Length: 303
Image 1: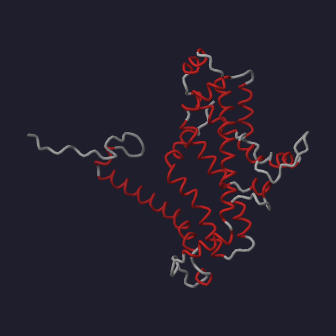
Image 2: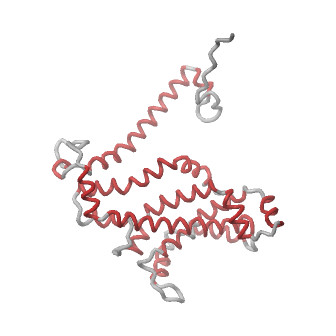
Image 3: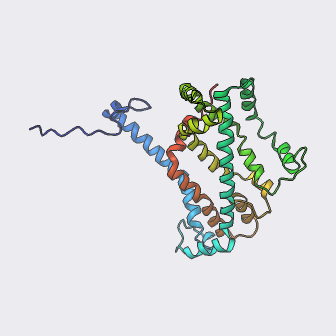
């Protein structure tokens, strides 16, 4: 009977690309290089995490402890009732609800409008599609220049003379006209075989039906990536919600964070509010980090 133990397969045993491959770990020099890289990455991670942890724990300090000399990193005692009292007093739930409404609308416009635009440029290719693509790409260079014209158009919509300030609609519309996501969708749709689309056309499916029944089910990876970009971008968006929704009952967390920290809150309460505002994005990253990393690989724009 063969009693030889099977060779243990490590995560580097089949690694053949990158800075180090599996054969490098068999040498002393390779192990030293790996240890140095690991320590360097660990140091960078701690540098990034320490400020976040400090903000989180400082919210539970009182004002005197925040200005104590020498300073303390952790509070003397954690009073979690302070968090609940602050949540109710500031009515944080209302701002979270506003942010959720804003995110749902932006996400819907982002996926449907930009997805359809990418589908048209990738598969239908009407006359002038190449010119439209170049114009969309060029519009990515004009984000700062278009700020004032866009604001004027939202305050007084041309021809209709409607004031859209105080409404979520302008921000939703801008999410549905994201040039980067249009090109991202187009590039992904280019990789879907035309045979699937031709078979659907033979069965009598319309272009819109092909998009809903063929393209969308096969595009879950790019939809997930765009969704994450849309959610994180909308949550951290300050400029347009401040211009369009500021000083109204519809302002989201990003505007509330600026408004309250610059007016009525103590320093410890500002830290507590900052901690509350970053927790949702930490949760999003924790659950969807593999899609975020995959989005970096998908976001290369090719002609």
